Length: 212
Image 1 (cartoon, rainbow, N blue to C red):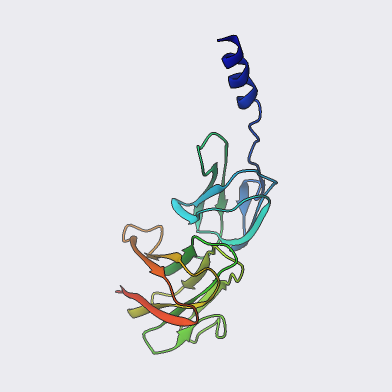
Image 2 (cartoon, helix red, strand yellow):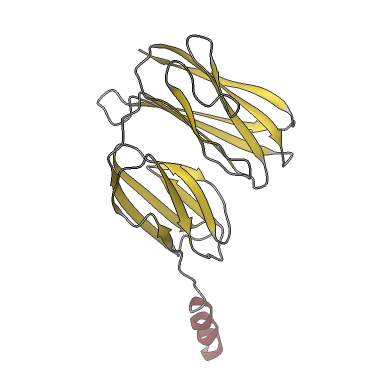
């Protein structure tokens, strides 16, 4: 029994903290900020404003993120057993968005590209990041996990079609798209699409959302 207790105490002493080094909390004015996590030995689950935007990432991690107007929250937790975590919150003085679309996926070293066809037929993607209607691809990720983020700042009504170009990487990749309409208002609505991607260098139709 004494030997068993010794092993138990020894194993729990090997826990390592996960630490968010930036942002540091408080108040920011920039829409795009850098999330920087110090050296963490675990697989991590990163949740931003209630959305699990990074499913797994190991070690030090840096990624550009897009702040929402008002209160923002980031939680980083040990993916395996949730025994180690860190949390930070901050307020952002940034413009509101009528439509925000996140694309994230569950594999590293995999490049997915978010494409959004706007009501006038214009397609917003990495090769055409700004559109006449005011749409913008704010964050483009080529290394894995995402999130890629599209925003429409102005309330331009109509149908917005969402597509994913599976550029290359892991053969089996699960992609998730979250569309947020009228974020932070009484009319806020969220729609989630999930799909398994199996063939590289293909474009997949995800679905559509409507701004009214």
